[in-house]
Image 1 (spheres, rainbow, N blue to C red):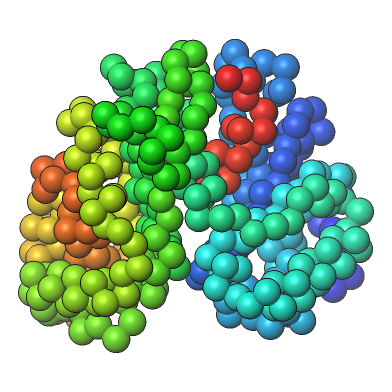
Image 2 (image 1 turned 30 degrees about the vertical axis):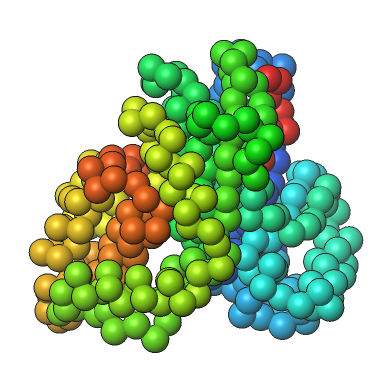
Length: 357
């Protein structure tokens, strides 16, 4: 690769792609765009279930904050370190695309395909909008893949993901009613051969960025006051039958293991807190009050967290959505990943593509 007549070698992290399968997955969300590169051996994957993310990069541009004509600049920046040899590439847009008009979506699509036609090293296999239901399903599948061997009941996994523009829920449906009477049910066989009935839901107006607008929830403030503000706004914007969601949650066994993605993982890893891979909703509320909401802004600015000022709102919002609206008990334990590797829906897409159930 050459920049301003200075030629440098390809990034060595891609060397493994010369020996085994590497797939590139682009995730364009509400606040930015990420590219993930995963590698696996298709011949042994169903036995060893070894899937590795070898590369990840994020840029702040997304389809919500650029014009279609700027698509080339977005992808030039995103793929600036990629090797010359050919890699299969899949481009998915989430809430950023769902919020656009049909005409603008088609315009972006034309620019995306034109850009890839000029890049012989990137074989565009698919470029499309990912529905909220698909986001929820693939995020759940990713966590099921990562954690099912650690659980006594391998089918009892639930996930809650909060992104910039939407929130997703997915959990094994174990209620009394027939699955055919419940909306948003997916049926699949688990890795142990047992049937899983997976209930998924996407809340398009419940993303972090959308819900934080016009709220006075900045430290120093009472976190209870933040919860009240968020509850009022969420009730106004709510276009969903929360009773349906709460009924589904109530029918889940108490031993369901819940995993938090997106904002729930980010807050758990905040240096303002001292969680170690898990927290209860009560702990989050208490820690938010003492370590984020009641701290002077100048002290928050000294923390090793560029988003420390938002931690008060983020904690209050997680509590409000998960407890007051979704209906999880206050003592529910939320597990989150403390590693740097992304384990959300892009990984789930890889698993679905290569795993044999």
